[in-house]
Amino acid sequence: MVQTVRSNSLNKKYLAVGVGLCALDYICIIKKFPHPDEKHNAEVFSRQGGGPVPTALCVLGNFGEKTTFIGKCGNDSEGKIIENELNRFGVDTRGMVFDDHCHSPQAFIWVDSKSGARSVVLNRTNTPDLQPEELNKNMLQSCRYLLIDGREIEASLAAAKIAKLSGAEIILDAGSLRKNIHELLPLVDHLVVSKNFADKFTEESKQEKAALNLLKNGFKSVVITLGADGAVCATDNGFFHQEAFVVDVVDTTGAGDVFHGAFIYGLGRGWDMQKVVRFSCATAALKCRYIGGRTGIPSLDDVVRFLV
Image 1 (cartoon, rainbow, N blue to C red):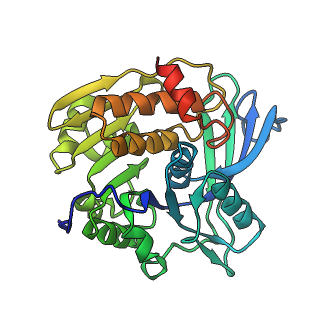
Image 2: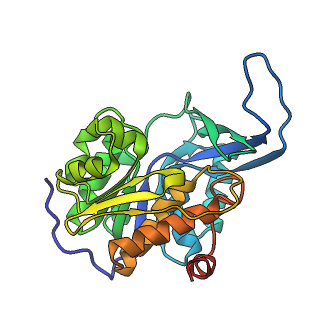
């Protein structure tokens, strides 16, 4: 395991740096999911930036925190939209790589108007992985927290090692059990994963046992997000379950990503883990009132008022 040189310092330039997938989301709310050979009209359409890590950073930017994103997209019109939207949320994009020879990733999302559940098709057919030599080391050495999604394993590993040696804590957002993810785990401080990941990794159906089993890998905290069932968390101080908050759901796209941004905000404030997870569940719930992962991001004041 890589050892840190110094503790998580309050005088770092960025609260968080993120390394991971960035995409442009094309979202349609429809009455029902199409069957083969069916055609449906969209009830609502939105185009906005997506990707787990950059959306989490947008939450932090919306809360007034300094963040920066390192990721790859094409030097094309969609890449410019992605960059401009991140900038509007206050996310520093100087570490992004805009490749003249590739297209920006796209996500095509269908949302059920009744439940808010969605299906996603990701198009990365002409987007090569971010490479370790393309990482901005100065940015990685200037953060308190590094958020990674583990998709581009070589870049994720390199980024985690650089940040860890500079005193940062590493947070892994793992929605799926990806190839070679085990290589990242020894570098991770806080593991925040989906139920799908926890079930497959631990082969344990009970969430308390799954979280506690994951904690044995040496993490400071393990959180399993459960959608409408809230989240569970395990630390050395024990295990707890946080219920989900009830809102009028329009679209669940990006809810987990928003959770991660709020989670980092709470860590940065030094809150106890129960307060961190409760705050994160509330922020994610408020996002679900709107279409897409970005337009629904609440303000910090909105979350505070909601929790009163």
